[in-house]
Amino acid sequence: MSTSRLSDSSRPAAWHITSMNPAEAPWPLLLLADPSREKVKRYLPRCVCYAARQTAQFTPSGLGALIGVCALQPPQDEQAQWELMNMAVSPAWQRNGIGSALLHHAIRELRKRGVQQLEVGTGSFGDQLLFYQRLGFRVSRIDHDFYLRNYTTPLWERGVQLKDMIRLTLAL
Image (tube, rainbow, N blue to C red; front, side, top):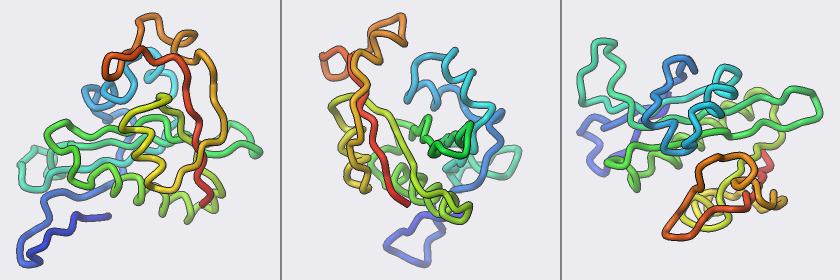
C-alpha cells in the first residue's frame, strides 16, 4: 500500500493506494477518463485495478472514499505489452500528486510481475499527454481517426474535437 506524503510528518496521510476488484471500480471516475460505458464494460473485467482512497472520510468498508482509479489490462498473448486502459482522479483531488502516485504504484507492481513495457493511448494534445510524457512515456505511434471510428459522440477537449489517439510506451 502506498500513502501520500505531507510536509508535516506528524499528520496522517490524506489518501492511500490499495488494490481494487475491477467490479468495484467507481463509474463516475471511470467515465471521466473514458466516456464510453460500453467500452469500459468490455475491458474492465480483465483489468488489474488500483484505487486511491481518502483516509479522512469514513466509509462503511473502512477503506476510505474512492478519489482515484487506475485500470491496467494484461496482454491477451505473450508477445503484447500491458496497457493502461483507464486512469482518473476526482476533480476535487486533481493536481495533488494522486495520479502520479497511482501510476508509480502500478509501475512498481508491474515490475514485480516481470512486465517489460506499459502502453497508454490518449488524445493528441492536452493535459493527459503532458502528464504521461512527464512520467517518462514516449510517443510510439499515432492511431489516426481513432476517436472518430470508436466513439459515436464526438469528444472535445478545450474546444477542439479529438480525432487521433497518441500511443505512448514506457519501458519498465
